Image 1 (tube, rainbow, N blue to C red):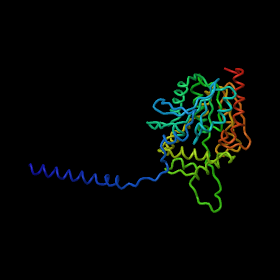
Image 2: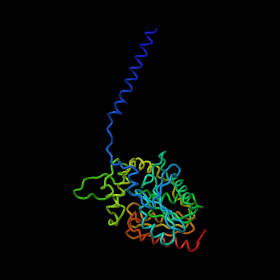
Image 3: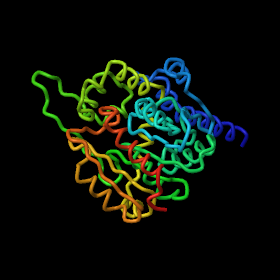
Image 4: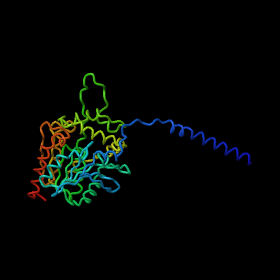
Length: 334
């Protein structure tokens, strides 16, 4: 009996060893994925943070933000591939006209840290906005969003009607899913992957960004070498490919018209008529979907592209500035 038990133990041990060989072999033989996503967050903060940059831990997320000026508060929310530096001109002009401007990097972009549980949903961004505005002591504020940031903004305004005093949407996502920009290939050029896919790839190179902004910013003089380098550096922070995938998996679709119907704040819709990502008729759809906003206004920009806050910053901020000043001087509705 004792010999039999020993034999059984030997057989089981050999079996477990054999079972574990493939997994052990695969771990040692699996090649590392080549990647350009090698920048550390600390390196990027050392390179790009300036005297106005502030960092704060909010609900377990280290957030990069700026808080400038005095007066009624306006929060600026960037779009896909964006960061708070996209609003430099807007901030300067709004501060000069008597407003206090708060802007931040949405986690997964710019110099804000990652979210530990990988929850990059719009709702999670909303709780982060709540925490940020509580932190800076702003109970009520106007809010501006472009592209993906527009979707974040109108869903926030619909659910925080007691905090949002006014809303500006610029080429906002959320009603229409963005078009995949299709361009005729240049003669002699190598076939490249779709520009919308490089955000998920382990490798991001300058040509990817050049192709992307060629489609989304019509005035290419605004796509400077400095601008491209900043975007390339932020995209190549470690694990940014994973956070991009997590973000777009949680893109809010649902019933946007129902959500928009809950917005009560005075609302300005701004749209570029040469926007290749979203149809101009979508701007009208936003106006139609805001029946309970106490004031609605639509302003279009002839030949304007998708990221018109970057492409035509002075022209666009002047329109928003007039809107905010009108509300500041009188109360058109409650």
